[in-house]
Image 1 (cartoon, helix red, strand yellow):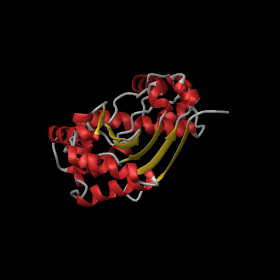
Image 2: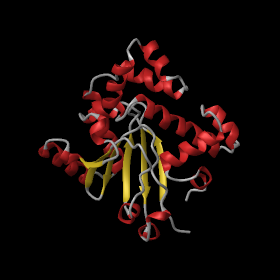
Image 3: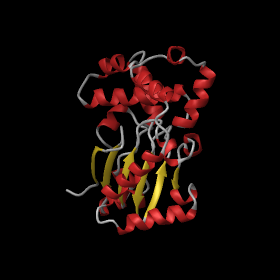
Image 4: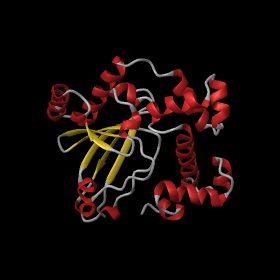
Length: 240
């Protein structure tokens, strides 16, 4: 049976994940055969078709078109809030966008890295090496941003998170825009969605999933899933 093949593994870049996705002729016939890319609070550096691209933080599901669906992609998905320091671009400038690296960096540097990727025998290892070099030159992760991710992943409220971090909510919002591409309220919704999907994929009943992930009830879960992914939960879990 034909179909796209996806695989991932942990990266040597702290908190990051290396992944590959290989499309096929069936994928090229229509985007409906490809799962949407769901919001996850992350940004990715991608290699495909001789191009280096950056996938910014999503606020809604990204549905690949037929050409994208059929292509081979190598990517590294950075831990939430870390990519802007590596890439030198505030996250909010890339929100819901896919941008060529050449449009973000000096053309000579982008061209050098593209040629390096083209010459690599193993593009996965080459992309990870590139990311490791960028991470090694970047400032250490912002302690505030790291705390915010951990707190919101654990279901903490935004006001409580700001208070415990020693900042006001306005500053937290401003810092979140640069790090995540959107404010802490949206990040909390995205992380809650990911918690719910993880539980539901393990077979946890929807009502229990809603409670454990931090939703008010099952109806709240259903609304958020539809708003953030464009699909009902059951359809999403079936992989359509």
